[in-house]
Image 1 (cartoon, each protein chain N blue to C red):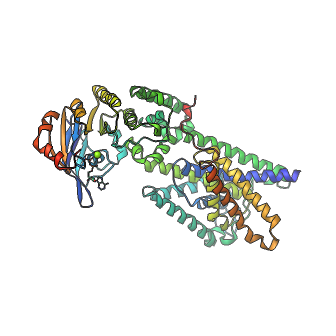
Image 2: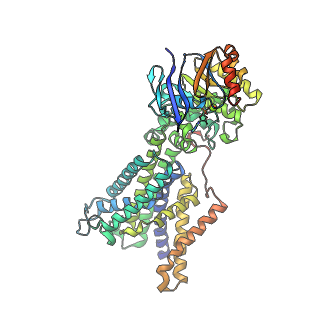
Image 3: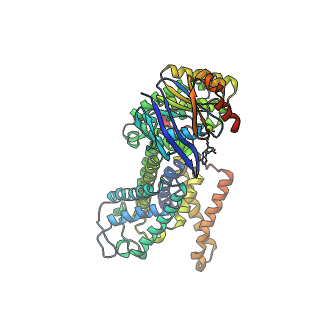
Length: 315
Length: 254
Ligand SMILES: Nc1ncnc2c1ncn2[C@@H]1O[C@H](COP(=O)(O)OP(=O)(O)O)[C@@H](O)[C@H]1O
Ligand SMILES: [Mg+2]
């Protein structure tokens, strides 16, 4: 029973870390229509940034500054937000397909750097000994997992409130208008490239934070955590939950993570041990099927976008 | 001093000059017309004036300030607003928020005040909403304030665009065919509203094919044909001008 509760806490902690990444993608795609196909890259930037800032000094990789975890998380947001801002600045004035190609390239590049810049990133071995929150109670799994869940739940809540305040405001209304008709929005004085850049950078920062949280909950990262299957998973979460709606983003994160984990358990139970590594690909298939069904049955997601943007208009 | 001046504007698409050295000027407080057969280059001219297109050469001055190099989103701050030949509402947004969006210099359009000063943003939003509702009322659209704009008819969309640009308090508005595709009863509303707004001091430059409407609105019209400026004068006098008649008959008739 305690084992189950402890697992449930751990499961939810991971699920909410994905929900946070979804909140970031929702800001970019759901609110602004920016097609980021390199989500994994921005998550990876955050994870590596925080790991490098907080791990103790080591020969395995550079930095290892041993900073507090909170500093690592702030650093992760700053680094992935800045990277997003630079990429956005370079591509957002161009046609929208350039952003897709660029973000894809960024994700590939980040993976290659993580893999090959061994001096900086530890290369294929990744980075270990990433400090875990509440590590002093790690020998009591229920308490340890419970505290971690409380922490990520609190962060998710804060990010949700912050996102809601922001997107359901005049600022969010401008994003929506630019998404619906860029020329009309410009004729009313709104700079499409400025707002897109803001949304892209902010979304990237939130993704980076999600990546950093995951790194610290697991305590270990490696380049192959940040492949395009991660991007696909996050996109599925957002689309199933409801693009353009922050609650939908969180719900999608939790639901799809449940599906992903359950299909992993099912594969473990059905497939013989020596085939399991290969059968892991079936998890992607399961999520893909789920996505296709969701698109057929509820194309706007479980909780879709609202017509009224500003929260100040709710009577 | 004229409120809006264009000097020798040229706009080429490939080798074809849609606007070929056109100059015009609009005086504060007037309703000026811009007429000419289809394909004359009138909408292209508006796109240049509004910054949606960049001219190959020529100058544009709003209240004496050169603006031809500035992006479209800077125009409204200089006082120039526009509507589109085919209306461009934000289709999935409600009418009231379509109009609210048009207000300039909103505190809540910046990120930080939404986190740090939410009550100020809330107060501003109430003000903006009240202004937007008053404008929708003025356009006889307040009944539909909470509907998404995609549900509107063509004529209602023209009125919505007018409300949306008015909340920005421009000093000159470019109207591209405000009567096109509008049913006759709504047409009277549109004419009456334009005259009302003009009486409050707003200048207009209007592209219009409906000559009856041109006569009722405009004190002075400029005529374009094949990318060039043909002539200008009072509507009645211009419509008797043989060169103008020739342009309309020679080109694809309006
Ligand atoms: N983006 C464009 N690319 C190429 N040709 C264009 C473009 N926009 C307009 N034109 C051409 O320029 C000419 C003038 O068009 P327009 O300004 O819309 O005329 P009007 O509004 O007077 O009917 C037309 O021949 C049209 O086909
Ligand atoms: Mg036209």
